[in-house]
Length: 273
Image (cartoon, rainbow, N blue to C red; front, side, top):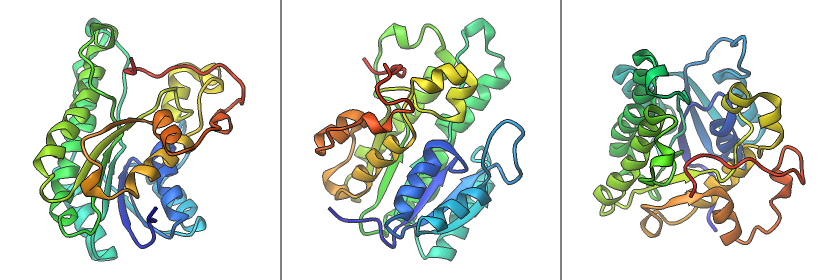
């Protein structure tokens, strides 16, 4: 297996959670990690800033470039990509991790919240991909990885929170379309999604300590992402990977250490049939 040594990853929403975990895992190989996120100052309810993340990445052995970037802004995204290219010489990998969530029904979803989810999840993924692809075309083993679920047209995934589902599936449709569109360019475009809930700030806000206790650590997603991003891009594209299944297929048999509480019965995540 190849490594991520010297590779440059542009990760959205990497100030905490899964995005940060993917950055730290890459940093252990000596990768360059661009932290593109909004949180520059400490948040009263959410741990982590782009600067604390940069410190973690550098402590793990990588090089970090923290950039304040609201992926709803065309100007900020293109500026961040250009700064990343100027600083590290190119971009090898884009991880579309940033996401907004509201598990509300149609009548309980304010349009402001609807717009936020679609602007960050679907539009932000499309925009960041659009900005990075010209540079990815110059890379030796280019990858785009979206933290997005497998597409399923079952009504049970739409009924409770149709606005959120549409926004996440927009990220998934980017995988479906772009994998085919850029196959000839050798750019891999894949999705990764967890089988269980992951102990992140979002899960904590949704379900509190009880939900966190039956979740897995972000490390499982980071390790799964690593297995994708180190594969030859021309031989691995258009896939909707599930973290657990991917790791098992790679020979990882013991997943218990990923659990917040080893041995606990885990809560399944959405969108996995």
